Image 1 (cartoon, one colour):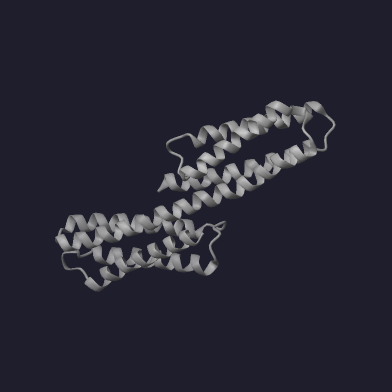
Image 2 (cartoon, rainbow, N blue to C red):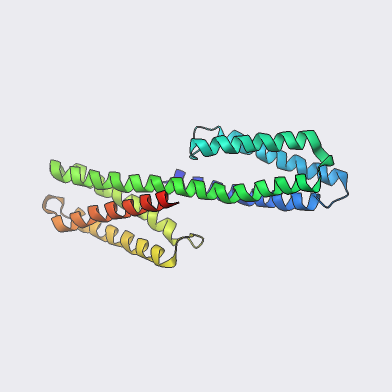
Length: 222
């Protein structure tokens, strides 16, 4: 769970850095100080080299086609910066600025969409595990499935509770209520796993399936 949160935070941090460099490039485009221009271009170049290195990491969650396109952009920035340097025109600077601004936005969306897909499969897996444990009549297996499911919903509640979460307030409120419901019902079932309320367990499984479907539908629509 923490790895997923870190991925979002890293994307947000990189987006802010890209925007800050875009602002610096805008300043350089009107500057007459060659040392300042070279310094800003060098800083932006180093940023894109770091981004390219990150994209090549096996831990990067971005889809392969997006990573490939970003690597091409990185090399374009490198070639333009190294070939033109302080001799860049206003149009050249505008090109670099636009790249930074557009990628900063796209980077966050790509990661969040990918995470939405992961959460959909996580919810689906938990639903299947709960159903399988019941069918097997294995109390220990059921307890493990209930614990994993509750951890997932605690994570979802944490994301939904964040002030900077872009989801509509009503959606966030509903997710938080569902997370509280799952937690309370998990504790209720956990008190007597040998004689569980089948309707309650069915409701928890259906909740996962419905939210999973909703996340996938939203992902496809995007």
